[in-house]
Length: 471
Ligand code: NDP
Image 1 (cartoon, rainbow, N blue to C red):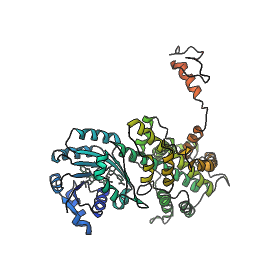
Image 2 (cartoon, rainbow, N blue to C red):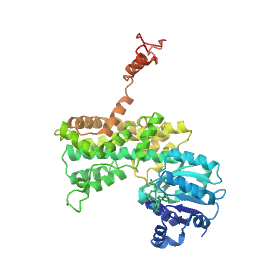
Image 3 (cartoon, rainbow, N blue to C red):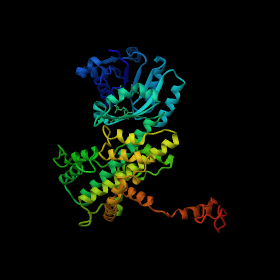
Image 4 (cartoon, rainbow, N blue to C red):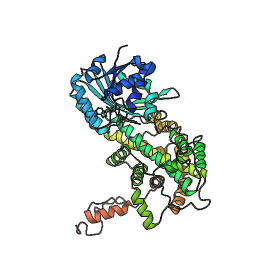
C-alpha cells in the first residue's frame, strides 16, 4: 500500500478520523505526541491495523508517507497548531499539504494559509462536525482552500464524510479561512438550536409541571414531524434517561451551568464585526454565560424572589410549543445564513449557500430534515434570508402566533426564553417599516452633529437645535 496520508494527534477526534480514513481505502501513517497512545491505537485497530502505519517521531511520520504528502492535524486549536506546523515545515517537500482539521478560529487559518504561501508546502483548514461518532463513521466537512486543493483531497474527504441519501456531506467552501468560518457559524447555530430546545424544556418542565416522561414523549413526537432533527432526538433520549444513582430523572441531577469551548462566542463576535444581527445566537451565548453564574442567580432569587412561576392554566400546550420551536428555528437559521452571505461579500468568498445547507443535512450536530428545504430555499434566496423564501415564509405566517403566545405567557410567568424572544423581536423588526431609529438619528445629530436624512428628501443637514454645543 502506498501511504499518501498522515495524521498527527490521536485524541478523540484524530483516532476516529484515522480509522475512518483507513477504512475507506486510504492507508495512513499516524503520530501522537505521547507514543504509548499510538501503540495502543494500533493495537486496538483490529482489521484496520494493516492500513495504519505507526510513527514515533515526526521524521518517521514524514518518511512513511509517499510524496506529495498530505498530513492532517487533529490537535487542540491555537498555539499547538502553529507549533506543529513549525516542527513539520523543515521536514516537508514541495507540494506537500498540511490540513488543520481542528476547530481553528478562521482568522488563524487565514494567517496560516498566507504564511504557507512563502513556504514550499501548502496549508488548508477544514471544519469537521459530528463529534467522535461523526469522525469515525461520517462527519460533515466544510473545507477551505483553492479548487486545486479540493481536487486533490476532495475525493478522500467525500469518501469519509456522512452521506445524505447517498450525497456526500463534504464540500469546498472557499479560500483561506472559509471552511473554518462556516464551521464556526454552524456551531453558533448549534448553540442557538440547543438553547431554544432548552427553553421549550423549561416551558414544559417548570411552566406546565410535566414529568420527565411527558417531556420525553413530546420530543419524541416532535422528532416525527417538522422538527425532526438530531438535537430534538437526543433531547428526548436525555429526558427519558434515569439517574443510576438517585433513580430519578437524569436531568434533575445535572447542575444547570452550561460549558462552552468558545465557537458560539466567536460567532457572536464575528457577527458584530460584520454588522449582521444574529440576536438568537447572541442570546444563546449570553444564556450559557448567565447559567454559569450559579451563585449570582441564587442571590437574585433571594433578593427579588425566585422564578419561574408556573404558567397560567391553559396558557400553552404541546402544539403551541411545537409551533414556537418551528418558528424560532427558522428565525435562527435565517440569521445564521444571512451572516454567511454577509461574510462571503466581506471576505470575497463565493460561499455555496445551498450546498452549506446540504452538507449539514447529515453527519453534523445540527443535522435535520428542515435543512433539506433550506437548501432548496437558498437556491432561490442566495442572500440567505430564509424568511422571504418558501416554504419558510408560509411556515412563519402559520407559526408566528404560537411564538408570540409563548413569549407572552412565558414573560408573564417569569420563565426566561431569551433566544425565542430574541427571535420574535428580530422578526417583529423585520416587518416594521418605520423603526424608532429617527429618534436615534435626532439624538446623534443633537450631541454630535452627525446629521440625518429627511423622509421627504429635502436638504436638512441638521435639526433646529444647537447641535454640538453641549459637547
Ligand atoms: P483531545 O483532547 O481528545 O486530543 C488532543 C490531541 O492533541 C491528542 O492526541 C494530544 O496528544 C494532542 N496534543 C495536545 N497538546 C499537544 C501539544 N502541545 N503538542 C502535540 N500534540 C498535542 O482533542 P479532540 O480530539 O477532542 O479535539 C481535537 C480538535 O478537534 C480540536 O481542535 C477540537 O476543537 C476539534 N473538534 C473536536 C470535536 C469533539 O467533539 N471532540 C468536534 C469537532 C472538532 P497527547 O496524547 O500527547 O496528549
